[in-house]
Length: 376
Image (cartoon, rainbow, N blue to C red):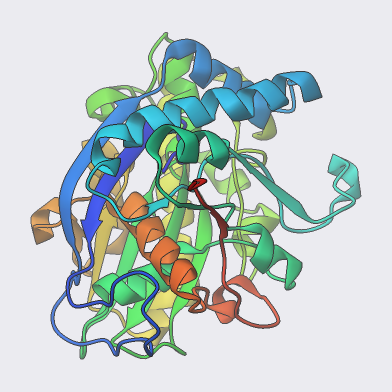
């Protein structure tokens, strides 16, 4: 998995104990027992090389030619294969989300968005060739073709892994984009999931203004002054006020899209966008989740390690407990990669692996495309 923070690749080796082997024709197992239901045997985080990261960010900003994207697809495929190589020796199947370089879930003529579409790169054929294992990739297009927004897809796996009877839990990811999955016990129909807006995307850009990849320790965000008037103005963004299902990405949440932000110095930008991310998340919970009843929020993603972001989030959502995955004894860094491993497994088995009511699709689909190694 390479997420919207574009900081690197998370590779996990996941054991689905109690589930049938690949290719076994059996009904989908019922959920039972405590969370999480699968065991992460190994997890490796592989940072992107500076030149690859710069190329991926440029592609997301529409600064890349067709020729460059074509090459970037295979370049990233090699990086994904490298990240998976050692773990693949013990694997039966590889699931690769790749990197989203553009996501257009709705039409917007002002942005030149005339066709709903999405593009994830990181050539699966390269991973197959390098590892000799089957690969499930290209997860998002089937849901988009069925009328959905192709996001969020992770909630299907969140329910499989983290839902527990009698517990109303939100699993929240603070990646480049902030997204949540609301799990009302084991009730599939009651699952609510959507992108709330920005998390680390704006904070990372603020850090880059002073030569850093991200706000390590939340020190930049803690050291500046929050321009409350800008935060309040940005909270009126139509996306933040739209009703789920909804999804978004870096193409919308970047500093260039925030009126007035460059009137501030770098530290104040960091402080202000940190506060904005927190307030946009809290606003989403107040409007769409808290009325349903909520026992706890469990947070994953890079933002879970930003103490400034987390302290503000806990204050904004009190008295609801806001815990990190690590405080629960879970692995936050592996959460999204593990989720796509589950989606890949379900796709290989021929089981539907989407929740259409969370994406807006007309019906559930089997999301993912299978690429197999050639056998003589």
